[in-house]
Image (cartoon, rainbow, N blue to C red; front, side, top):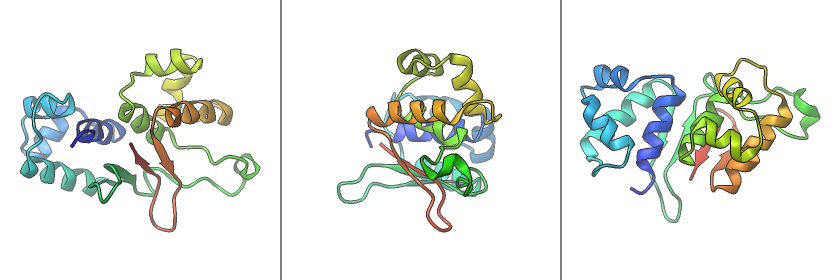
Length: 167
């Protein structure tokens, strides 16, 4: 379960939940959540099941590895909507801020590290992740490409299935 700790952290952060929020809702202690998110111990299947069910009830599905695939996460369309038909003349479909935030966490980076390494201002990264609409499509593209170069796959929405990430 090499990347499940980052996946759990990304799911929680993308939903803007604290470890305390998740602990109260699932009955999993904050200490256990901290240890799991920071890869400080084995992830118990029973606890992982509780967390997966909870995150799924909020719109983020954690997908187990299959064959040669790694862990993945998918967002419901209401959490991370598909791009509209008029976006950037279909040259590029911008990734929603919530998805970009989860991708950054999956890559094991802080906002400051992403900003510094991608040459995008820290405040711009923060605004894009917050989803306040103040980041340009070009900056979102730069951040997405940077994260793709670090092994994060962005999968566009298809039908009822929303944005997905895999690493």
